[in-house]
Amino acid sequence: MAHACTHCGHSILDATPVPPSPCPEFIQSGIPSSDFQTEAIRDAISSAAASALAIEAEIERTKLYLSDLSARHAALKSFAHQHRSIISPFRQLPIEILGEIFVALAPTTFSGPLRSDPKWLLTRVCRRWRDAAVGTPKLWARIHLSYGSPAFTSAACFELLLTQQLRWSGQHPLDLRWTETSQFPPDLRQFVLKLLFSAAHRWERADLTVLSEDLRMWSGVEDMSFPRLRTLKLETETYEEFAESLFVRCPALEQLEFPAALFPALARIPWHRLRKCTLHHFNANGLSEVIRRATNLLELQVDGTARDPDTLGPTSMVVSQTLTSFSMTSVFWRAQPQNMLDSFSAPSLERLTLWDSTPGDALCGFLLRSQCPLKYLTLYGLEIPMDFILDILACVPTLEHLCISDEILDITESDMESLAYDPESTTCGLLPNLESLSLSGVFLCPEFYLNDMLRSRCGKLRSVKLYPSFGSTLNLLSQETLVDGIKLSWIQELTPW
Image 1 (tube, rainbow, N blue to C red):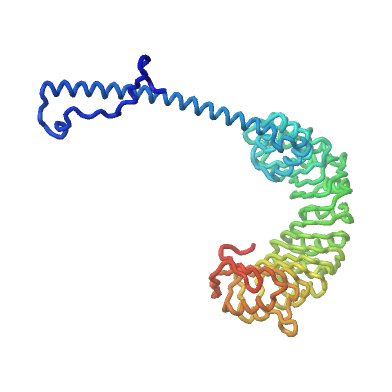
Image 2: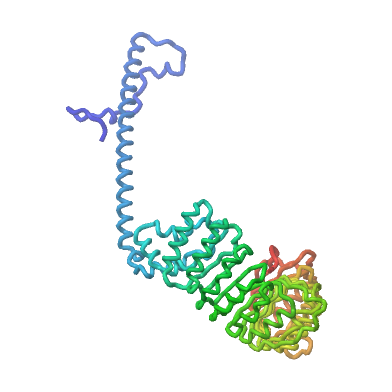
């Protein structure tokens, strides 16, 4: 409220803020004032100064009042927010559902310190969240350790955290990942191994790197069993007897990834149970041996190859009746006296992925020999001319999804004509069931050849992605367009590696 006289109620703030000048004609001139005018001016100055002081005082009182209003406003909003959260549907969730939400939102990878892992942060929000997190063993059963896990944490604190996590995981099957083993100090590494081995009966998925200095500890694995272990990825540079003991005690193993260093342990692996397998640096004979033993294998991946000994005889042909997916990456064929694809056939194969230089004749021979119902074919950097690729495509009439990526592959107008579909033509009847197509290379054809190919496949084909390399003469104005119901994407940024 404005400051007012206690007797008459008059407020100085109610007066005109700026009083009229007693002598305005003197303001813009240098004429001196008379004594009478000087006295009048002094009275006006005193009156204006008094009004200014009163207004300043009122401003300060108003600021205090506004500050008080703001504080009360914030307090009321905070009160409403806090009490609104009490009746929110999220708070009414059963604690079991809250725990499942935590599991669903927990990241699968975390490279920071263990004490900063999101699941540990959940225990510091409030008591209810802590109870939900601690009471959900599945949340703690995923133990993924990286080079950053022991960072900014004393060894004693790290050991306590990891021990507590294993305890809170209850009897839930464990998902383990510890590949950057060499980044841990020796004493801490031995502690982690002992702790994980103490729960060996709960391992379900394990991705581990075995260092040579830790083989002594692994040699004691024969005293343990891994009855729940279904997925195992093992990396080691040397073969020791621990591998045989390990595989013998994994009766439920279904997925396996291991290097050629463990080839001597093949006889110990429960191949009849394996459904998925990844091999690192195997040669053609090693691949044949795996296929011969794994009679129920569904998915097989070969990553890198080793040269077969020059004295080795021809690889015996094997047939995998169950294999539905096969991929090879980082394979260097010129170093191979024998081709991987010459060593087996797969009559049930539906997915095939090949990376790097693959001999076209070996691929054609494999497809003709297998006579498989192939639906997905992905070829990366094969360095095979387009006319040879067309011969390969003629071997797979069941194909539905095709991806070819090669930055030096020339795609001409005659190639586009060959890719066009004419059910009545003997030369243009490739891939009648094609639904998606991804091509990367040097496009040397006019746009109307592309459009003709697309229109010929109207009805079945739904998606086409083109990745032009340097030197392409085809240039589409629109990066994404629709041609007779087919979504066409022209992507110049990347190639689909």
